[in-house]
Image (tube, rainbow, N blue to C red; front, side, top):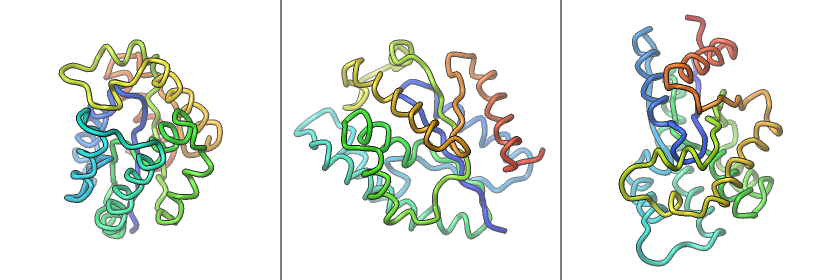
Length: 207
C-alpha cells in the first residue's frame, strides 16, 4: 500500500520540529512505519545546500537564486527519499516542504505563488503532500522563541516574517482541502491534539 505524506509548515519559531517529533513518536507507538525528514536538507546534497541557504555569512543569494536552490534541494529529496519511502508504504513527516517556498519566496519575496508552484510542479508531479499543517502564530511572538544564533532567514526584519505569515494563510485559502491552519500560540500538547484531530479527519490515520 502506498504511504502518506504529511508536511508541517509555519513561520520560524512556531514549533514545527517539536510537533514533528511528537507526531512521529505517536505514529510509531501505533505501529506505523514513519520516516522523518526536513527541508532544506534530508539528503547529503540537500544538507550542503541548506548551509548555502541559511548561513548568515558571505554573499546572500538574490530571491530568484534562493528559490531555485530550495527547489534543487527539494528535487533531490523527492527523488532520493520521498518517492521510495512512499512506494514502501511509509508515513513521511517533513519539517517544511514546498509551501515554505510558496510563502517565503513566492509571497514574502514577491516572486509569485503561481510561478513558484509551476517551478516546483515540474519535478513534484504527483508528490504533493496528502496533508499540510500550518502552525500559525504572530511572528513577534514566535521569533522570541528562537534561542542562540539566528540563521539568515530568522534574521530578516519583522515585516518580512509578517509577510511570510500572510503567505501561509493565503495558501490555506488556495488549497483548503490540503492545508489546515493550527493556532501555534497554544501549548505544545494542545497543538499536538489539534494536529491529531486533523490527521484522523483527513483519513490518514484511524487510531
